[in-house]
Image (tube, rainbow, N blue to C red; front, side, top):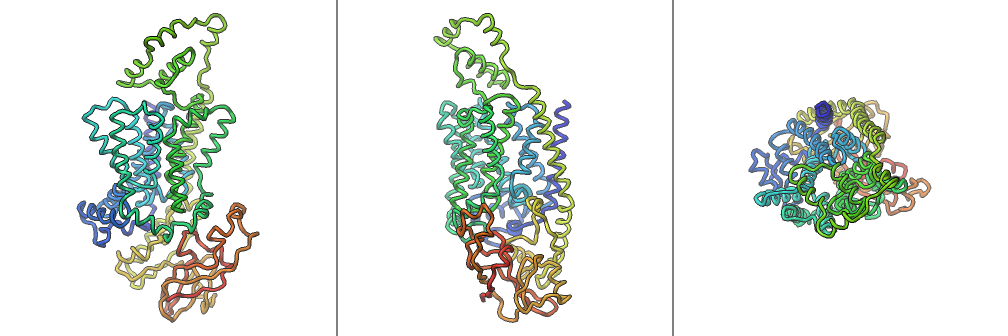
Amino acid sequence: MLRKSIYALFLLLVGTAIYYMTYCTPLYSDDWNYDLVFSLDQKITSLKDVFVSQYYHYLLQNGRTIPHIILQTFDGLLGKGVFNVFNAFAFMLLLYLVSVRFGKQCRNYLVTSSLAFALFFFLINGFAESFLWMSGSCNYLWVTDLLLAFDLMIRREGYHPRSYLWLFLFGLVCGWTHEGIVIGVSAGYFVYYLFHRDRLNKARCMALAGLYLGTLLVIVSPGSLKRVHVSGQHLDYASSHLEALYYMIDVRALPVLLILMVTLLLLRRLRLKAFVMEHLMELTAIATTFVIILYTACIAHRSRFGFEFYAILLIIDLLLTLRGGRETPQCDVSTARISGETWSGAIDAARDIQPEGDERQLVEQKSKPEGDERQRVEQKPKPGGNERQHVEQKPKPDAMSSTWLDRLAVLSGAATLAAILLLVPKLHENRLESQQMMSQLENTKTGLVVSPWHETGHWASSYILRLRDSNLRNLYIPKHYQLNSVVFVPQHFLDLIDRGQIDFSGFRTTSRLPFYAKVHHGRTPLYAKVRLQASDPGAMPLLAKPFGSQIGAYGLTHFSAIADTLTYQGTPYVIVWKQKARGITTIHHLDDRIQSIQLMP
């Protein structure tokens, strides 16, 4: 009872932390569009509008129908405040489902949830995009909740035939979610049951049929097919597969998994073949998703979520294996050899698992050898003397190792909560800045919005999304405030103009400005063409040198940049943003290579 109370308190603390982080995350990028009926630009006022919107969304944008129904219900009907609460519960549910998934290896859910919390927080690059941002969370956090629930459902035995339809429908819902995750998961289940056909039954076949149908609906949607054809022109895509491979250097969970596996192999604590066979689903999902990301050349942090998530699940599995002192994470009694000590070891493993209900009856039936097998077991001579003593003193899990690993896991969860406390000042600062900017949007007639432009910092950037950085601000935000355009500028820029510190007759910038600016009395430009000097190979980072000119940031000779116009104190200015119009990599580090900036009307 005390253990359950402590675990409930831990989940409550985690939920409170995630709630506060979500509360401080403003409406961002797509959030400004999904409160409208897609393609009709009408405000959503009912659930009927949500389904009409998703009909057009399926035809024109992508096939992620289920997560976007959830998203538009919050964004268009319930509001951001309600989402903040439900998102905290969704994250708590994620930790609970992970703990249940590994319940046979660790019955102390506090240990597993603490470990999962720390790994998700520190190893998912772009944590805010996947867990806090409303559009991102519905597509990643909420989808993984569904897929974990599906995985737990498909592992169960003893379904009544009347439940097959519900299994199929739930599989359909889980598959009709996000192509960047479910394609890998579907491939993983196919490969797993290809090698474990004896574990298939009618219930699992029905659930998998629903999953595959849902995945197919995502893939073949007209919007998804269109998205593939235009991917190279989108901000979140690299210009080549090699460049996309280079940007994988910020992947975190997958390298940790590989290092952990190699370490355990060297220490002889891991049987690689048994591990691979038992985790074919997760390994296939990781490999498939990784290849898809490289093929599409997508370099957004959230695009790696699929294989990073399953890499974290395998990391948890390996760490819990260390905790239990076993070389293989699970022991399936049905595949154990019925001979001598191997049979005895299988029975001991089954006692550790302790199935309940129908599963216990099934294991007991499998535990009794029949026919010739029973005869071979009975005829085997009993060990005597020292041999019997050796069998009776079979090694047991290292209790001391288990205790220390449990403590470290719980400490990792506590350390993660402490890290969130360190983020509170930055989160609060972001909340106030967003409120100030939205207040200006409600009152401005020119679309000029001034911000303090606080620096986020490298470490905190993974957990904080700022309203001013919405890459779709001029597409969606002006619609809400009936403006022609919206331009966010830092207060520092206006101070430079007031003090006359910089002559803006030509393009000028400083390290604190996110753009180049100059006085402009001509026609309003659509974009700017920036010409660059050749890169100095000696100035490239070490990891970039093997790729050389294949990486856009170092191989560019020119690029197109976003240009905006604004008027301050009666003087018109044009600003050219330090961000490529194609590719998400900022170009502020190319300042010393810029030869000219040409405005294109």
